[in-house]
Length: 319
Ligand SMILES: [Zn+2]
Image (cartoon, helix red, strand yellow):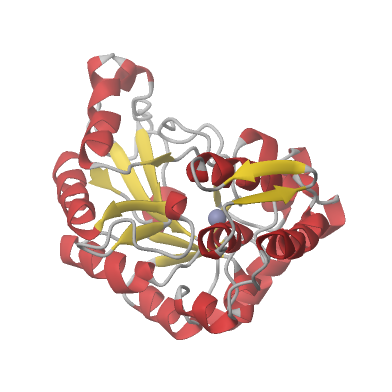
């Protein structure tokens, strides 16, 4: 079976919980991440992009082997400053998915801007679209409800909704310099690539594809590949769907990913993939916030006998 682990951000050691932005996108702290990677390296065979693309029946791995891969979405600066040194130390080559226009504009996604507004507002409660949110006693719940509201909005409503939320919070949106400091620069992304990690597309604007018509989806999917290839002067072969749950993509998304020429695409549906994956354009991924969570994701399927069902297909007998 193939377990693809996904992260967005890591906490620096000793700084858990200290952010002006969305805590929800943080995974483990640096030390836990290091333990996770060391354990994953010892317990599974970790594949890089090239090996994932090359997975075939009977790829030569022993029967019952757990294969894994490590991915990061959204191109936060911690990918370069925290994750990459650990991956390099462990000899792991990860896949990093970049939302091209957000890096270009130095702009954080709406989820971080929403979290910033709710954390920084001096108000104890706010009203958005006629609904009241109590920030004093129910901050977490208010934040989650408002983030859900954004996920289901059509893409063009997101900017307008952010402005209205800023008005409701009576503070401006986060200054661009603050946003920029949270993201990798193109130079840092090139450094990741030069160190052997793969850079994939995470669309142009990180809008939820299912909220877009097919021509806009095509621009996000194929346009981001062309743009990234131009910036990196290299081919881009992998894609990760923004948000990536079943409601966030539609049949056009998958067709367009295929037409754009990607060899691999990752969702955020949880679970394992077969080896080779039944659908290379919808490979599920799992997040792992704690060391125990990662260990159980590898060990539990084995204990439940699922590993056999998801095992490598037998090698073909021909020459
Ligand atoms: Zn993302």
